[in-house]
Amino acid sequence: MRAAGRWPTATDGPVTGSIATASASSWRRFYFVALLLTLAFRGWLGVALPFTGDEAYFYWWGRIPAGGFYDHPPMVGWWLAALISVSEAEWWLRLPAIVQPALLSFMLLAFLRDDAPATRWGVAALTLIAPASVLDVLITTDIPLVYFSVASALLFLHAARARAMWAFALSGLLLGGAFLSKYFAVLLGLGYIGWAVWRPAAWKWKALGLLVLCALPAGLYNAWWNSQHCWANVMFNVFNRHGKAHLGWQTPLLYLAMMLWVLTPMVAWTLLRRPSVWLRQAALPWLVAVPLAVFAMLSLVKNIGLHWVFSFVPLAFLLYARAVPEQTLRRTVRIAAGLAVAHVALVLVVASLPVEIWAKPLGGRKYASVVQTVKPAEVIAALGDDASRYELMTDGYSPSVTMGYNHRRYWPVFGPASSHARHDDILTDFRTLAGRDILIFTKEPPDLADYTPYFREVQVDTIEVRGATFWRVHGHGFDYAAYREGVLVPARRLWYAIPRWLPDCGCYFEERYFR
Image 1 (tube, rainbow, N blue to C red):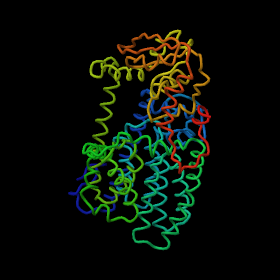
Image 2 (image 1 turned 90 degrees about the vertical axis):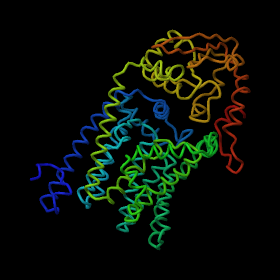
Image 3 (image 1 turned 120 degrees about the vertical axis):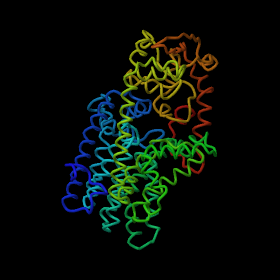
Image 4 (image 1 turned 30 degrees about the vertical axis):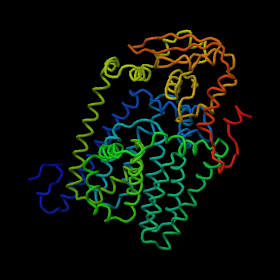
């Protein structure tokens, strides 16, 4: 006799109506338990985890909202502007991220309402308990991207099945929202094109044309904003960010390892070794295979960010669950649940450790970064009267936005920094700082040659917080003319060398410093 509530196994014989009902009930019960536990854990993590550098960077997008931002499209900044208008509590700003796996699982359940219970609840459960779903509570550009991309994809799959033109149109509008979140939305669009090209038909071309037409306004808006702002997104994503790209064997292996973790080894292995998984379905494989294949090709020359693939993970779970038998799906979900428990246990252990335990294994700048992120109030308090006497800056974008977020006072960036996160070029006008006293806060011993040309007088001292050493460069009498020649002119050459084939419709950097 089968125990009450137990999932049926292969030895239980043919699936009768009562067994099928019991199986559906077990799946449903497991899903709701997972939903409750993951929401509770993610809610706690959203409160306990200090704001990261990326989140602080996007926080300033919301705090000083605009039509666009330096390195990505504007959607997350617009969302954060709305959230900040209500509260600046970290858990509140992270709320769209905290509830994302739950909301995605609801979307999948609605989309799969006519599928077998195992498929419906299995996909929804995997979406809740996959490693990234358990751990990622950060509010970044990827959060709106995932919402818009998954919604667009599910509507597209419905439209392709029912030949519903209204659904193609709505899918296009959502794809436009995804594009205004992050440019990786283009990869989903490539999947749509692959579907239309494979076994082409007149109705497919009509559907694709309607979808593109509805997505087009978002692209045109983004192009307009860029044309008025130094083509900032284009310069960063096409030209400036790829300086370290090179052919290598390590990055493809890292990509493979990452996908094994993100999808769980069971799902990733099945999708890799069983072509029949892909061939059994019509449109869905294109929406998974095309983006992940593009990332695989890119991995030959550069590291693929963990968050880059998040938009396509729920679709991969859907592809897997529709292609494997219930017994296999059940085993996969159970193993994934075990991995989720292990990840939660690890996070709880790390969270219980004092920050000082990382001093020896990390040391130097890395440990100082941990202290600055985990104990920002203590670091700011250690500045003493300097916090009110000086214009406060750091030598990098991440420390500036992190310190600024915790201080609730924007900290500009002093010096050349890097190609990344140069939104400070839009926010800070160094002309207005001429003659001012500036404190540059840094996590490593400063080279005075980077500072003395730009001040009448420079002094350096250190402070220590939780065993981490920080340096303070006190610059008195800022020399804007020297800074323009020594920092801004090279920055213009490195980051703002706009190709002649892009129309010159306006550039804040050029207009501010060189006209």
